[in-house]
Length: 112
Image (cartoon, rainbow, N blue to C red; front, side, top):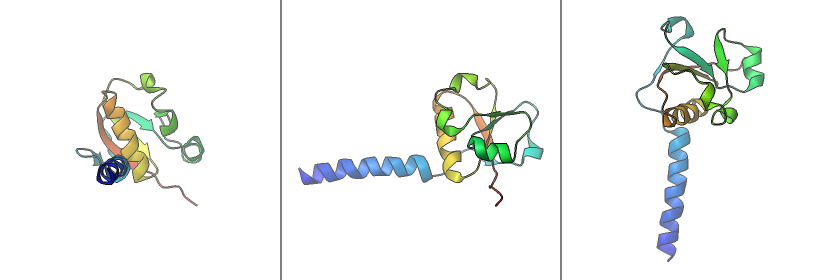
């Protein structure tokens, strides 16, 4: 009984670690200046961070509101702007699960 409980616990912990920390495959880092014309930009940073360094023509949709407002995403390839690897990994997985195509991302660190 203990082995079964321990196995289930380890599977749950492993899934959480995978979803948050293992990098998403088939997505490349790209500078905002190098983006293709046909791509939509989605900024998943917190409103406080995106307000300090706004990105023109970007849809500001923090990761906390991503599932609730998924219908606002355009039906074309997406470029994700995030502040950390964790935000990038989580948002790409959520968006891909909803059937959207994510081609690239940019990490914009907060300037202190």
